[in-house]
Amino acid sequence: MGTLSAVTDPTVPDDVDGAPTTALLESVLAQAAEVVIVEASPDELDRADAARTVVTGEDIAELARLLSVVDGGTGDRCRCPGWPTVLVSAAGGRRLALWTLHHQAALGGLGNCDAALRDGSALTRWLAGRGLTGSRDVQQSLARAAVEREDRRARWVAAAPRGLTAVAAATSRREAGAEERLVDLVARRHPDAVERVLALLAWAGFPPRQPDGTPWHELAPQRLLLAEPTELIFEALASVSPTPAQLDGAAELFTSLEWTRPPRAELPEPLRTVLIDHVTATGTDPMRFRMRHGYGAGRATGA
Image (tube, rainbow, N blue to C red; front, side, top):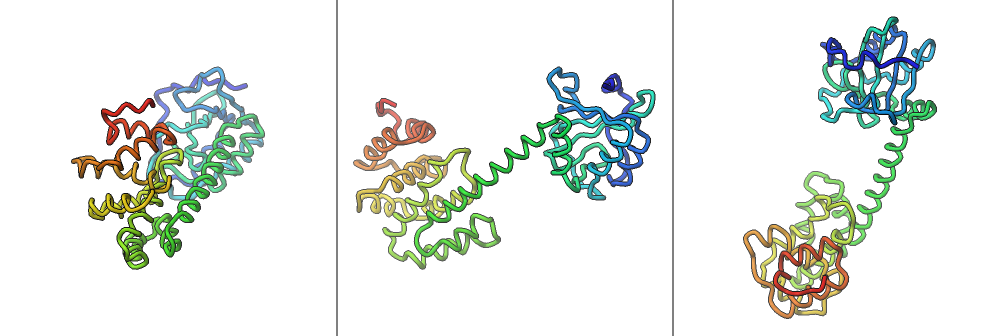
């Protein structure tokens, strides 16, 4: 196995002038006698548990093909340190280059900015075949997360009040003007004010039961509710026996920053007690936390 003795060589430049290109990459690798790829960022190359592989001979040409980039670069540099790290050395150990992979999609250190890989997936498979499975694991995790995000987006769209599915889908994709169209369509499809507020409360009850934060589009129902008169919202909730989803939406609305800073209104009874009982019995930990520091402050909940 090759040595990493030149890893901390202060004479190695962080970059070179000019935009990154595949031709530049190939010219560097054409001079290489050895390429060491370490599954770690540049400041962690000596980690004992970091998987690594040494590339020599004809395999360097194969690596050059796998590392080919989109000429011209991205015009920017990722702020993360990047990994795996690619150490390119000439015969005798002289360092020719230090590159880093970023998010399994770009190469840093080749030129004056990062460059997108032409086929990051092929490089990931090749690395995994040589025992460096971290990039593959990350890609698989990102793919699962993308599927989960899409499933959540679709469920949020399906939860939209009647007549709003198409514009809700556009809003979820952040299409230009979509939320403005949503505002207009909500008023036209739900002209009865109490019905409109109750429909929006149920829709606003979707995010608090989901993991991993709240995307901007999922707060659209809450933004619509905040545009409604306070007394109308209280009147709507008092006019029915609210559903669990409507109570979830109300609990989120009444603990939102827009409602509480400055306080928009104190919750009337019995609404306050109904919400406290609902969130105490069925709410998530974040919902209970916000309740205890909001409309439930000073009330013993047992939670």
